[in-house]
Image (tube, rainbow, N blue to C red; front, side):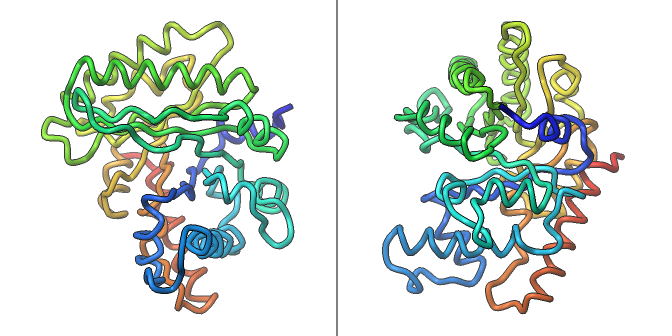
Length: 298
């Protein structure tokens, strides 16, 4: 049974969602940016252990609390790991007041029709059952749109809503993430197509079913206003998508009703070599900047 306090915080509290869900493909780059070279580990197990140490340092920092960080998206291995001797999801909620989410996708298919659908997710029901037992509130899954392709974007939306329905049946809140690449040659046109397809999917949801949406910040401010106002949408959150934090925050602040769910833009300034005081100060500054962009709109 989902904690009602989690639902209330996820739906209405001011703040943003931290994305701490880098997977196998993005982990080496995240570690290098943190100051850990490829030569510092051997194989996936050691790599993910290094990443877990970094994530635990973030979530145990005094700056990382539900006062401004309302939720955190976890990689599966992070969900299964511990922080200060406790399972990470329960540590986040009970010690930090941060709502735990889980990344459930297994990566992307090769591009077709201008998009990359999600790969099949074997064992998804079992993973969701485990997440429920560990106290996770919701999930996230990512697919990518590169071109303004009507057929491709329609396929992306269908897949997101189909798997979202499977997630909802377990009592979890799905975050649908049909990311539009910031390098798309016609990003605004892709956004218009995606908006229409998402509205179709939302209107077709069964009574009582709701979703969250994680989207690339649009080219035209408030282009996604029909989504933030839709009664089947709990919240619309924004991915940083490769924008540096100042640019991502400037763009986000121009969009009413959107809050951040940043990954790289959150951790860009963090380094393994920092003292705890330096680390906590750098993380606090990033959290403050992202919080302002999520709550103070221009």
